[in-house]
Length: 248
Ligand code: PEP
Image 1 (cartoon, rainbow, N blue to C red):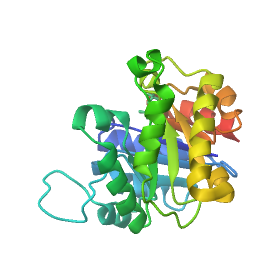
Image 2 (cartoon, rainbow, N blue to C red):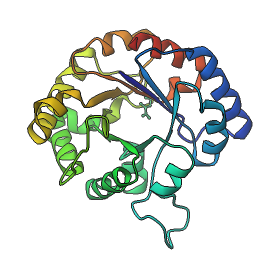
Image 3 (cartoon, rainbow, N blue to C red):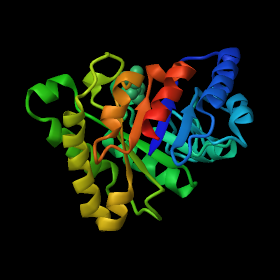
């Protein structure tokens, strides 16, 4: 199980310090569950100082595909690695929707992240319109296939997929456990097809979209749900810790 908190564009420096300290205290020893927090870039360093030597790992929310160069405002894989990141979220629906991130760009970013030993948390998921048109499975299949095109994995630990239906992100409308499992099973099938039984079955597939302490256990009980990517609820340490507890 893996539970990762996506803090999005929240927390100034002081708030990030307080939230990271509270997460460390509230989560305590998560046992076999892997836990990560993904603060904004400018707070990565200060959060690293708090979480290093604890079970909490550090992740970034986004990354440019090039290593360095004239890309004003962007941050690269070696920069994230140097500041202590283990994970990087790629292809979040907000990046796709507001910043035009394409499947092809996500694919290049995954390859770059892997080259620098970062674990990409690759987000896929359909919009409400696509679901209502009966296209959810087709969209997710396209996103997963395009993201992983030509991607070789050194191990099942090297990459994580997050199924995040866009209609469930930040809306309070969570997918039912059955809806989540249906899509996770499809993703599992694609992973097994590409990477074989052993790796395909061992890869983490997270669910994201309005996960709360009240619904986490039912979602995590599904056979192909291996944890969660948590937005809003990760900004409250007690809620985040309760979600981690639900994964234990
Ligand atoms: C997210 O942004 O990845 C997310 C899942 O957000 P929320 O939990 O707030 O729906």
